Length: 145
Length: 110
Image (cartoon, rainbow over all chains, first blue to last red; front, side):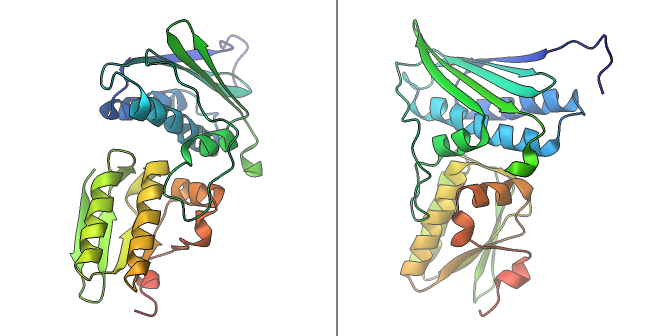
């Protein structure tokens, strides 16, 4: 239980290029947040990580020009939720949100449905020359997943 | 990511380590395809050392499963951790990729 003087929100930020090698840095950023917030349920952290990595993958795979897209990941831990914001400088992108989970035999198309299933809010917006993702998972509901 | 490979004659065990993600999945899928093409269509993917899988890793397993079955074999997974099991269940892939507790159990019938 956080004391009365504990901050309401703590923030963790990662900036760099949206390239495959940097996915480890996203994992590390969340590990740092979890390490400094032992009150977080490990299942919440695991499922949130699974979701945000799928969105990060999307930027790494489809962001153009390839290898030149920069991103900024911000993770915020609050008392009742964990939030990530991802801004990238890639070309305008229109995510196919709301798709059902593909059939068992499909080899692709699961990234966004996985993220949508594990998050309570997932929003995409094109802001000027930046793609912006906003992802939130409410805490304390892991047993419902 | 690295992976170990052990050919037991009747089957081959592949044991990836670390994150089975969009970086690791293509080489493992390519290796599975090579093994199946060489007549090694009974495969076990030992996931005990995989701490994270993403949709690319799942795609590699499904692709490998389909390739193995087309050649009369199978691909089975063993020793999956919590995150892998959660994602298999979420995506309904546990219906066709049932996680075996151990490699030994996965070999049942072979």
